[in-house]
Length: 371
Length: 153
Image 1 (spheres, rainbow over the protein chains, first blue to last red):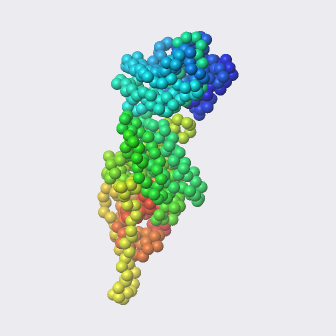
Image 2: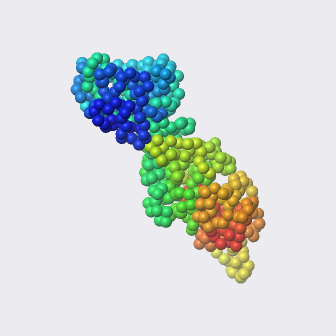
Image 3: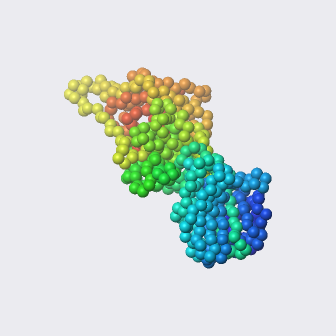
């Protein structure tokens, strides 16, 4: 979900059709009496006072705003990202993650609060933003850690001991400490919501995006009669030691064909260690192999069989100590754990398999695959 | 398969070829031919065969679109009524299966120990030492040993 607020001046935000994203949604004003109006393709101070808007759809756990600071603010600006927000009557609950930009050159703060758990956190001594457009981003990682970034730099990290359950809407809250104010929000981007399936890779939007991208780069859609350019691709699943969140990296193969690959060494990334390994199986159901060594004539692929991995993949899960993730066509992600590796008959019962929705921008995972 | 750096797992399997004929063997004449193609043997029932029997069953009998695609890809016909696959223990059938794989691979006679599954009008042959890349293909033949194709999981 995204919005660049492109519309005629004076358009109430609830009448505006968000532009710039792949998931259609609308802005809703469940509690705020003040209507925000678009001015010069942005939203900001409005004569009615402060305002709050939520997305009409549930959102994922990350929102990024583009905040334009035309000049040194004269008044205080309180710009908040709302995450996991829900409404009951006129009560809005959720995480309010503020970027407070003080007037008169007094700098800025990050403040994170919710009445769900009583969490209240304020950072101090954050520098004043320079004139220009800045990135303000908040995210909740899988274990309830809230990270806040300004211009890509981590500005605050807070752990809520009693986190709000996943789900709910995203939103923007905006008010100023006096009349006027020129700082504006020029863009909004939120991860689309997906029901969690309980796996750190499958539940991670960026990971799903990368795996589907790598599957495309593996030429899953190569001409089935030639398989031209089709090749397995691979990489590592990395885990940050600070908050146990994961991210994927692609690495060059030392050698690869349409049925195997040899992965290069793991990257040295400070503060992160290897959590697992991933690779693609680019051949679709019933398609032939073309560069595979020792492939017999008329060998055809069944990427959904054997629990999602070859016997060699399963052996890798057993011997490496890492989970092996395989993304196979048509967009099925399988996690091979040693718990399912033996006996061999257990592999076909592997439940750690998810269909990745390729039909829209969310790429949500769904438990299981069609046999 | 991903061969993990520093934790490399072999993916290739060499083929053992039969020894050259000796004088005694050459003198044996016709018996040599039988002997040369009669070196492959059956594997006994085990965990692998128990796991593979349902796979063969689903490929041959399955009614889902996926199973139809798989059958079509190697030219198998669905049976009129479901058949019950079984693990073959007949030495002569396993010898013929080994000879069929030898022909397909273009090798001389080899000593293979095979899982051979009978499934109606077809045999499915699994040679655990016969890898293609990271995969182990399941070879399908007619009952008269006409090669149909390999399905790779």
